[in-house]
Amino acid sequence: MKPCGFCNYSASVRHSEPSADLPPFLCCLFMAIALSSFFGPRRPLPVVRMLCACVLGLVSRAACANPIDLDALVGIVVARNPAVLAAAAEARGANEDLSAARWQRFPTFSVQAESQSLHSRDPKASAGTTTALTQPLWMISGSIPAQIEGAQAGATARQARVSEVRYLAAERTVDAWWGGVTATAKMEIASRALARLTEFRSMMRRRVDASVSPVSELDLVSSRVSQAQSDLASAQASQRLFLSRLEELAGEPVGPAALVQAAASLEGSTLQAASALADLSDAQFAEWVDRHPAVRRANSEAQVVKAQAKAKDAERWPQLYVKLQHTTAIDGSRGDSGAFLGLQYTPGAGLSSMDQARAARARAEGATVAIEQQRREELGAFQADWSELRSSREKEEMLLPAIGAARAVLASYERLFIAGRRSWLDVLSAVRELQQNEDALATARTSAVNLVARIQLRAGQQAWQREGAL
Image (cartoon, rainbow, N blue to C red):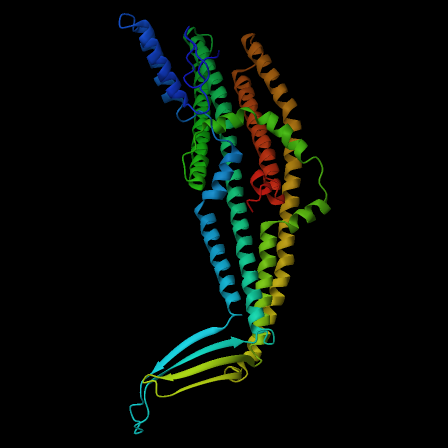
């Protein structure tokens, strides 16, 4: 039997953990009702205490119970972000365009009704209807296959665009998350420095009152306290900014509890990040680049332009078709049916169709070159992130002994100041140096984890990407 995981009631009354089908607060409520029946109206105090504990637990943990983690937050963003939904709607529209293009291979049915000519003097002339069925010979004429190919490439390009938009939204979420973790870690560091300086100010005030130290040393530590308060306020503002970005991306409130939990486990996260990408080569980067959403989108767009060039080339040639036609007079006096093999040729104004075909081929060549440009950009981004990751890991290795030395120096300076062998300024400078080193370590650790997440995003190795969300 364990105390309730929701209300955390730790008095003598204990009950089992709530089941998966029963909300925790209902578990507490049912237990309170059972205890009220057991104790009766004469002994309500234990019941009241337990109800108070349950209510307080409900209020205090409503925002921080089961805080969301980064993977779950990214999953929400890539599924619900408006930019992703808009791109998905465009992809569905492209699929409908492909379906419409495929229907062009089928016959076209038409019905035409005409009245008697207003200027006709023929008494036998009457109004009639014409029903026609036209089948293009698309196996001979290349315009329809080119249009279908273009629609297929367009649908692929729109789907690749969805993947790219999801990737960009996930990247923004990862950057905002680890930016918020950095701010949270700096808040903790600034709070420790502020607490230490506040204690020093109280000690110095007692020394000034006892005429042991001058007033200027009290003013000095008071200014350092104000500086620490400014650092804390700046970190708090930064955390609020990143939380607002996360809420904007996810479309729902994101509490600071998850950032606090991530900041507390930074050391283990960096070790896991280091093992996740132990050693990478240019060949591995090149393989990942080919799977990058931006490169896939550039490839698809190049296929669209090439298909458009084929369609323009096909438009320069006549189009063959077979037509079945039946004409019927309204009064039923006569009718006519026939089958025709037709030839339709629309060259456009002058030689414009030839110029349009050459322009389409030039755009297709440009789109092919754009693929290589996109590959180079993404390869450079891979290499830059990898180089920065190694730099962050090296900074962490250098800062760990520096922080240990700074703590030892601060403890030594405190003792030496009491003995009169170190100045007050030396002690406060040691406090500042320790805070700066701890800030740098937190930045290096969050930067390393953030860069690992970015590299995995570029390589398509995140959980939502492996599950086929792309």
